[in-house]
Each structure stands twice: as C-alpha cells, then as structure tokens.
Image (cartoon, rainbow, N blue to C red; front, side):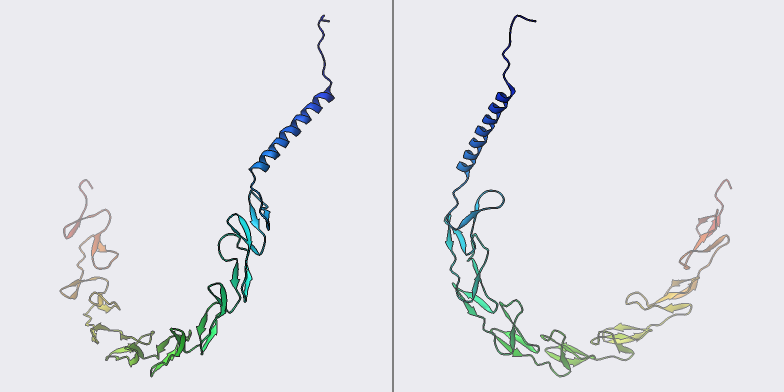
Length: 263
C-alpha cells in the first residue's frame, strides 16, 4: 500500500449535498418565473396553457384589468375577453348603440332563421323597409324561389312582359321554351329557316357553320359539288374517304404511285 491516505467522503453526504443544490436551483427558477409572470388582476385567472391570464365570464380585459360587462336587456354575455362588447343580442333583436331593439318585421315578411334579419313572403319582394307584391305579367308565373317570375313556354321576357315567341316557317320551339330552332334540313338565316341544298353524292349535316352537307366516301368537294375521287393504280382511299394514298411499298409521285428506287 501507498504511504499516502486519501479521505473518502461518505455517499450519503454527497447525495445530501446534491439534493440541497437542486432545491436551491429549483427555488431560484421559481422565484425567477414568479418575478417574470405578470400579476393576475381581480376577476381573472391564469391561462390553462402558456403564460398570461383571462378574465372570468361576465368580465372583459380593459387597460390591464377585468371590468364587468354591462349586459343590456334582451342580450346575453359572450366569451369575448378582448375587444368587442362582451354581449350579443337575443334572437329577434338587433344592436342599436348599447341596447338591443326588437327587429321590426314588416307586413308580408317573416323573421329569418338567423334571428337578426327578415325576409319577404313568397310572391313579395323587398323595397326599402317593406315587402311589395310581385305581380307576374300575363302568361307569366312565379318561379320556385317565389321572389322572381318567368314566362310560360312559348313566351319570352321583353320589357317586363311575356311576348309570344315568333316561330318562322320550317322551325320549332326548342327545349328552353323561349327560342326556336330550324327543322332538320334547314339552317337559320336571320329570322328565317332556309333549306340546305344537298348536292348528289352528299348528305346533310346539322351544323351552324360550313356548307351544311358532306360528300359521301369516295367523293370530294369541287365547285360546290361532290366529284369522284380518282384512285390511281397501286393506291386506295385514305381514312377520310375524300383522297387517296399509295399501297405499301409504293410512294406518291404527283398523281401516281411508284416504287422507290432500288426496289
């Protein structure tokens, strides 16, 4: 053994010292936290999460304090802690200054389900602060909403009235009931329906643009008529049916099909 002796500190003393230091540090932290936390005013409580405080129900924050909310008649307190009034009007009442007044519902109207405005009955429309009767013109009717009107089928709205739709010869009333379309084989030209002249070897197409007809397969348009497509040897009609293309392995050379050089 060495001639020198080392002093051995008992374990329980070391643990006791460490615990004492921990309590001192913790206490300092609590004191520091308390010093940093703002004072909670009367009629308030600390927030459940984070720092700060909230006013109790019936009070609201104002200038760092919680002041009582004065709830007028026909109103109830709200949970608005900051800003706002801290109260709202009951159903059927509206705010006027610091009071709640009954919403004046005019004749032929009803209080909306929200409780803070009114609507006109079916067949009436709002005009300033009243509900006036809405009278559809002759050949008109109230729509499903009850606050507008439409014309019966065969009539159209013009200058606040329902005018009969003028249907020209070779036309019919379309599905909307307020416009017309030309019969098949006719096309609209201003306010008339003119017959579409379909040449031989062609058929009618219902289109608002173009000639209104198309050539049969094997024919092409030439001078407003359908002329036969001349298919040379070793060729066939293409997918359109109005032109031709060479059979494989032939290639098109002007108006004929020839084999490529080397074949």
